[in-house]
Image (tube, rainbow, N blue to C red; front, side, top):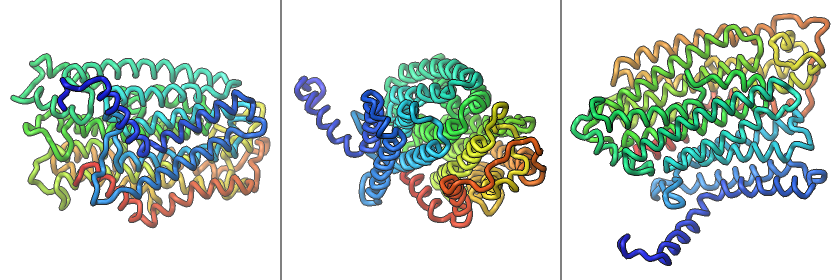
Length: 553
């Protein structure tokens, strides 16, 4: 039946069949929606006095996570692993399910942390967890977005609850200030991105990501250049979209919000923003770039220089972001601001893998890169990024958790537990927390035998392979290695305070023996950092399979 003969009843029938067929793959997101509705009902009916909001959030997250893990087992080499959902607004593939597991597992750890630290309190718990799950739902849509409009809606669904969570400490002026700055910067970035999306949809004639390459090939066919208005508009739209994604990743120069928001927000919220938003934004960035460049299986025949230049530009932004983050962290005395600049630096490291992927995909087709074809080498770059994100999940959350625990233990009328001075002599006050801090910080630096070393190694290896496609990547590699050594100073400054300096006699003591719950949590986020450094193969193999599925290598 052709489109002209399609009647209204036929249209309804098709939409109904498509919607019903999309519900099963969409089950984890539906479970999160059901949990949000349950929290709202608990709040509306006053049931939070008997049914804690945290318990509802944990139950819903565990079910959604279990469904995602079960779905990951569906995929094998004998079946089609890519499937559009809801009239191609979303896509369902191993890449989507991998990030679902990543985000939901991280959400579970964050909820567990908030239950231990008491932020939020019992009265505000349903509201807080509604915001937390609402933001996570937006991230789940980001990783599966298959349409330009869905990209924007998912990012906004992620951002709006984050603004409220940043200002959730209602009694602190810095928290309200952080939320206000976050809203203003976020609104500006959203406006720029929306305008860029409209330009791309108008020029390419489609809002569907899989169809972008076809429209793009028509624009660049015949050697399009900046002398053509259509091509200039296309590049402008692309840059505007990347501005919106760069804001979520806190890349230079769109990092303004990050230090102030991290300082003003609770450590639990800052930890959530530092990892979850990065993971979802990188997943969206990879999908968008693969669609824009034609991907691995259908690279544009003309191989326009735009795609190589885009990869190089992203790599150079990564270098500037990493260098700025490390330099700015030097002078920080507030540990949350220091960790904010550390987050900026690590976003730069991870962006190097994305830049290497673009350079490799648009390199000479017959060349070999470290013994691999360009598609296999690009899959290595994505593998490195996925491994880095999982390790970053544990090591960064581990540091923020320790910040929250120390804050609770040393909180006083004039102290917040956020200055480096509050960590003096931590090893004598709480050896377990100090050792966990040491492991997480060493991994953030990238020292063996911890997981952070292998994450950086995989990223730098992909940059090395990309250097054979373009000489600029040699500079990126040198800058990455230099920044790793450069970061030693401010990370070791934290350890020096905790292990060497004596605690002032007038300072409030950190609880000598943390409770069993706190100890279990500290070990739960620290042990994987060690295991991912000692046993690389299980996770790297899964990451490689996901990357290969995405590129169909």
